[in-house]
Amino acid sequence: MHDAVLGYLGATPVSIERRELAVGDALDWIRRGLALNRVAVFVALLQLRDVTINERLAGLRGRLNEAEAAAVWHAFADCDGTPGADFIAEWRACS
Image 1: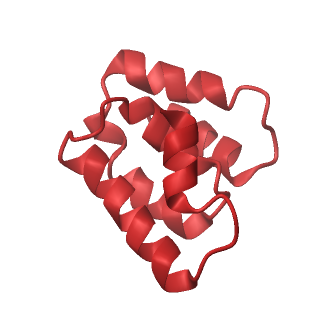
Image 2: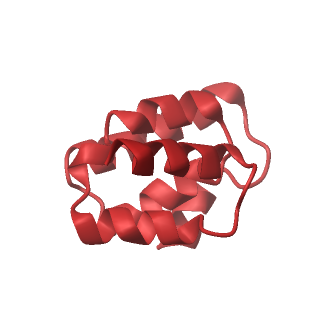
């Protein structure tokens, strides 16, 4: 699932417009509960290392249950100094 999401988001360079549409879709999958695996979508979005996407994800953190949040946190346990790790650290501090 994770690789499929990264492929959809454009793991290879894509146009800015195409990337924005794909990110919007993925955020909507989380928001509306459409993703089969919200953790995979959340992690894939964080792996884009884009702080503007992380800002948009911040509003969706509450949509994940405790087990899902823990799985996202675990995915970034060894990623110190990245935008995703910073996002996770801030999230954990607020929990």
